[in-house]
Image (cartoon, rainbow, N blue to C red):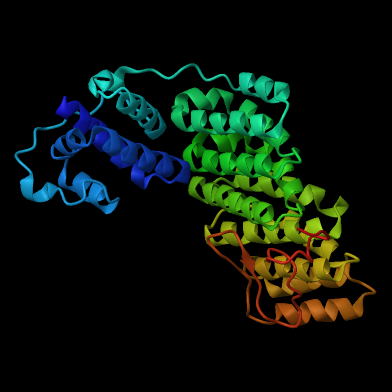
Length: 381
């Protein structure tokens, strides 16, 4: 009936404000497909939706010239669905119904239950796949299934999911790697409540990808870390803050210079976000790591490590930092003077919403991390 179609349209349109681009794209494609197949029936159903829904449909260029608002009659109250249906579920079923030329098959849409979530089957399929194109198809299906599955069903499997994704980050194919990162980002957005308890399962793979030759990979990893650190602030969790910092600081000493640059930037990002969000964390561990890295043989790495100390200055205090640095850099008077000179300046690094650390334009700072060049990675695109 037209009322069933109206319910479906409102369910789909509500997903246009979703935080995940994959859901938005799927919704727009499904709406466009429905209009092209159902034509007048699409308009009839749209007239029974709310004014806000009609406006969004018009904004998408649907029902153009039909004058929905001018012809709108008294709208019957649309009853909410008895159970939540994801945008991807609705989009898929809408497309099937439209292809069949009838909307009657969607009458029972709210009562459709998703299949049992079994991530281990995805890993088996990926391992059995021969060509990368087949792996990419399986991974994209896995991505959509995650978006379709309620939090209560994903939660018990989150550790397994993250271990699978961490393993996929070792894949040498660019598309597989990028899709895997997109999935991790979407998991952080949609399932943070159950993901953060086991987020450590995927941190090692993310750290290694900070040294990837592709700019887009490095930038995407930085965005994911920004999301993770921001979730720690929302939860105000000292435990998660300490755990994450420990996992980032641990690999710092034994990585090549180009990866150290990116890792120092991510640690700096974490401290900036935690400090601005008033989240307690082990400043002593961060200071020890900074003091050690300041002595790195690579000039850029050493210079960026100073910025970690700069971020700690407001909380720790200049006097205490000076005393600590004097003890650590005993015999390195030139280095010590350069660091202390930097600490006496007010300029601070900042982090953008995209997860990029921007350093002040000072002679003491050699920008090399979080940039868009390939020089910091030691490899070419």
